[in-house]
Amino acid sequence: MLRVSAFRLLGRRGASRVSLLEDFSFRYYSSGPLGVRDDTRDSRAYFTTPIFYVNAAPHIGHLYSALLADALCRHHRLRVPSDAATGFSTGTDEHGLKIQQAAAAAGLAPSELCDRVSAQFQQLFREADISSTDFIRTTEARHRIAVQHFWGMLKSRGLLYKGLYEGWYCASDECFLPEAKVTRQPGPSGDLCPVSLESGHPVSWTKEENYIFRLSQFREPLQQWLRGDPQAVTPEPFHHTVLQWLEEELPDLSVSRRSSHLHWGIPVPGDDSQTIYVWLDALVNYLTVIGYPDAEFKSWWPNTSHIIGKDILKFHAIYWPALLLGAGMSPPHRIYVHSHWTVCGQKMSKSLGNVVDPRTCLDRYTVDGFRYFLLRQGVPSWDCDYYDEKVVKLLDSELADALGGLLNRCTANKINPSGIYPAFCATCFPSEPGLVGPSGRAQAEDYALVSAVATLPKQVADHYDNFQIYKALEAVSSCVRQTNGFVQRHAPWKLNWESPVDAPWLGTVLHVALECLRVFGTLLQPVTPSLADRLLSRLGVSSTERSLGELHFLSRFYGHPSPFEGRRLGPETGVLFPRLDQSRSWLDESVGFENIDRSFKPTDEG
Ligand code: MSP
Image 1 (spheres, rainbow, N blue to C red):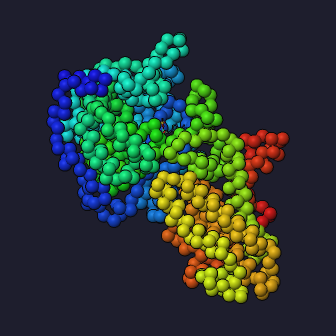
Image 2 (cartoon, rainbow, N blue to C red; image 1 turned 90 degrees about the vertical axis):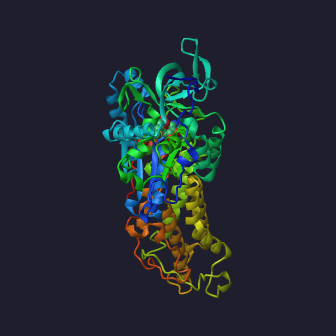
Image 3 (spheres, rainbow, N blue to C red; image 1 turned 60 degrees about the horizontal axis):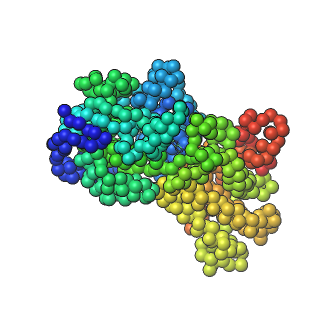
């Protein structure tokens, strides 16, 4: 028998060591170990959220993870508008000691707890407009088949062996910890208790015979993968962190627990006395969803983007790629990592009583409003602090005043009485500033606006690729401000439709502003889908004209016909996004803030 003590393997180390660099080669963009890839496969993309523990109700941090994935996936669909091309999975992580203990503490059977909390996640994601194509629960039969098959692959490739594991285990984080990562803190009775240095969660000493994965053999292949693809883990600081971890010792990993201790999980095939480690079980969910072990999964893997929080980076960027390489597969294409939300400067926790309920926020700020807030304020590389006043201020200024105000100014009945997309006059706004003739009124700032909005889609796409969605929104917001400046500068309300001198220029100002709004609406679809839908519908943009490929911004300026010129605007004339501050003042005195109905209602205010 082999003995692993505090992550040190004291037995026959790497007995069946193979030439790993040759054996676990990964060729992501060429044929790859999965066989030849055709064009359809190349355009396929698969996005995943982490699967969420069901020991407690969802909070805004969980919603944030799911929203980031949703926005990335929706943006991809704007580029490749075919349902078959994009997969998007989310789900719940239902096995393991943490859930077993939470169920016992709640006096429930584990399956009851799982059903209850998994339903809460499903409901939240439905309400928050998360456009996932699958919701996986790790207690499903399809998942057990995938995990046991995956286990068999590792076993048959000589990567699992039995050994004695002795060391610390943290049930809350479901991970093994070396002595250096454990500290002592006073417990409830005042005695010093061992806890994880990183998370502060209690740890307990574990000594048992387990199956062990030869993780130590994968240090070089992992380094090679990461060095060969600097964006594999994005943003860069996290990539760097993983490479640094790989400079440290990489001990073999215990991948099962005694079933007498952990019964709530998937049994090791052929050995019922052992239950598969919950992280191995959980990570395989990404394969289960795409049909593994059936061959169809090969059309999705490895063109996969995992969206994860920084606390689970090691599991995704070291353990998971090593397990995949071990099973003969490539690591995922991208691992996008985000930081955490704190609340009023503190970590969110049940014991501190500061957990922010995402459903209350969706009710209070509307679905689009709260999605916009989290994605506009959340910066992947560092933690962000949540407080309500910040939400109100941001939404009022960017969605209600700047964007809503702009739409209103350009479509109001007083200014655009015919209710159509006005014509663009090429002599008023020629494509070159030097060509501005006597009828032209365009100024240098107007050319700067056109150029900024023309390059916005590419800028936004680059920010999405770098997982900087907040920067994409910042760029859109800056262009909205610029467009408001344009309208303000030319004050169309002072121009007269009846005047042959004013009319072509008035139409041009409105045409340009509506074209800018069309770009903003298109680019906001991944973040505020309903608001963007209302905006585009108001502009008369049909559902087939909303992808990036169909954008063709201001084509008249570039000498091409415009399908929008002369088109009737949509009939909904209501407020695009209601000011929260105003509503609050009258509601505070009457019915209460929570009961507000902020749905988009047609009004005549125009
Ligand atoms: N079950 C594992 C993941 C397994 S994936 C194969 C897990 N679950 S979790 O429910 O604890 O966390 C799910 C996601 O929520 C993680 O990406 C985590 O980083 C994220 N968040 C948890 N708290 C968070 C904040 N306070 N802020 C932002 N995201 C946070 O880990």
